[in-house]
Image (cartoon, rainbow, N blue to C red):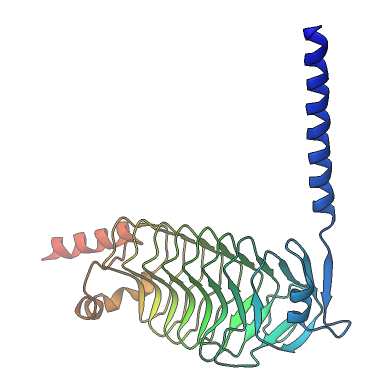
Length: 291
């Protein structure tokens, strides 16, 4: 008799699990696609109409808006055009003092194929107090900062173009355990990539060439991995100040070696040109032998 009762309990439990699973699948299937642009709806209007988990699909064209995202959505440009800031989905700041796109206080947002410009006072894309944000195949040009993460973590910034900005291409402030990879962050009027009080981040395979000052700067930032980046023809290539425990490997900075002395005079803290270490060591060794 006890065996029969146990069997009934198992059946009830199995049915309960099945119902929970089915409801979970139903919730997933209910994710909707909200379209912006083609039917006259603004991007912000489509975002406001979306539920968490929905896809907001934006038709090609130029939009004049400031976008606010406070829930988990996928904001996706139809063409995902990253080669030109003038085609695909282009959002120009309506209020130049605000970010063009701001992600705030949420988790799991994805921005894919969205080109932004015109924020004179802020970032083209600002991620504030959020986690697990992904920004990919997008561009942020002609802003004060291209892409900025502030008090944000576990996010991915990959395959974007952040050029021709007034200060920095990509800026991380008090943001930890993020991945910044395969971005083009050159020709900015200050720095390509700047980490400030930002720890345990992965900065890899980025192109940070032709910035006015630094290719990459770490300020009071610890235990980051800086690998496989290019930092050519900046005033200073890769700089570390007031920071510890950072790993540098296989970066390319050799054309900047002629300005090592001015850097030492300008910056306090530790300054690293660890790329091409073997080549530099051999050159110094040859000079020592000649003397």
